[in-house]
Structures are given as C-alpha cells and as structure tokens.
Image 1 (cartoon, rainbow, N blue to C red):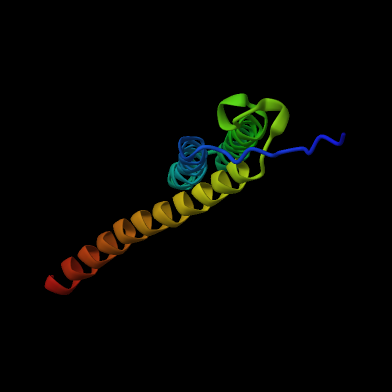
Image 2: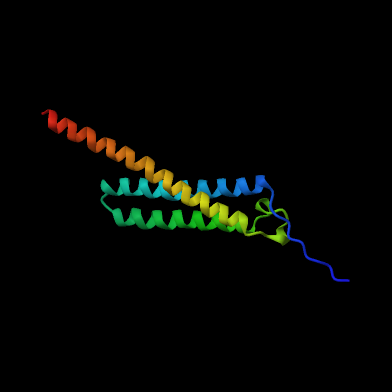
Length: 122
C-alpha cells in the first residue's frame, strides 16, 4: 500500500506569530536605519556608524528570518516545514517598512513646515 504524504497547513496562531515576527524585525531594521541616519548627521565618523549599523541590523534580520524558517515554534511539525510562515514574516517586514517610512516622513515634514512658518513670520 502506498502511504500518501499529507502536509499539514499551519495554524492561524502560527501565521500570526510569523507576521508579527517579521513586523518586529522590519521595525528594528528600518527604525534602526532611520536612527542611524539621524545619528550620522551630527557624528564625526558617520561611516563607522553606517557600517556598524548595517552589520547589526542585517545580522538581526537574517537571524530572525532564519529562526522563523527553521524553528518549530513557527511550524506545526518541524519535519514538515511550510512556506507560509516565512512569506508572512516577509510581508510583516515590508509592512513595518511602510509604517516607519510614513511615520518618519510625517515627522520630518511637520518639522520643515514649522521651520518655514517661523521664517515667514520673521
């Protein structure tokens, strides 16, 4: 008799945890990038800040995606790894990028607007 292989689909909580993990990784990566660029503006050695930040942010992001892809927490069965958790973590990562970009753009735009209004008033 042939035994049919069945692939279990992941639980909703696993998918939600994967998306949340990606969102947290994206928040760390892009929030760290924004913080680094702001820090470099007043630094005497901006190249050191940028390179160090790149290494740390990339290491954390790649390590986090590796954990999502291989850890049994994100799969119903470690031997039966599914593709959905890694895809959802990537989607969460991109959504974090969009949110960080929107939040930092609004903050910078409001600062520029206030500065222009102050110059016009004088």
